[in-house]
Length: 111
Length: 114
Image (tube, one colour):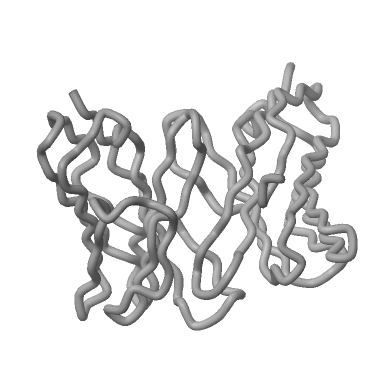
C-alpha cells in the first residue's frame, strides 16, 4: 500500500462545476495535510493546508479532513479553465519536515 | 517578499560527473528540504536541513548529500551521476518550527544526464 494515494485522472469537469479531488493516507499519526497545484513545467504551489478534522474554506477552495477514515479531499467550486493542472496531496510524515506526496490528480476544466 | 530561489535553473551533465545545486530560502525560513521529481516516481523526499543540521533523510543513496549554511542557504550535491538522476530537483523552505508550517517550493533545477 502506498503511503499517500490519489486517483491519477484525468478528471474532467465542465467550466463552472465543482471539482472533487480525493486522497487517502496510511500513517494514522499524520498531523498535517497539504494540497499543492502544479502546472505543466512549473513547480508545486501551495493552495491549502489543513490540520484538524472538518472543512477549511479559502475562496473557491475547500479542504476536508477525516482522520478516522484517513481521507483528505479538495473541492474546487466554480471551476475555471485556469484550474487545469495536476493537484498533489501531501502529508507530513515522521519527524521533521518530510512531505510524502501522492502521484497527483490531473484536472481538466473544459469550456 | 522574495520566494525560494534555486540556481541554476537548467543543467546538463554527463555520467560520472558531479553536480552542486543551490537553494536560497524565503527570508526568515530556517528549514530547507530537497525533493526529486521524475515522471515515473513522482515527488520524492531527499533530505531536510534545519539550523545547519540534517533533520530527516529519504531513501536515496549516499551519492546524494547536502548541507546548510548559517544564513539558511542550502546546497545539494550529487556525485558520480547516473542516467537515472535526470530529474527536476526542488527545494522547499518553511519556518521549520513545527508541523503546521507549510513548505514553499522554488522553481527547481532541471538536471539532464547524457
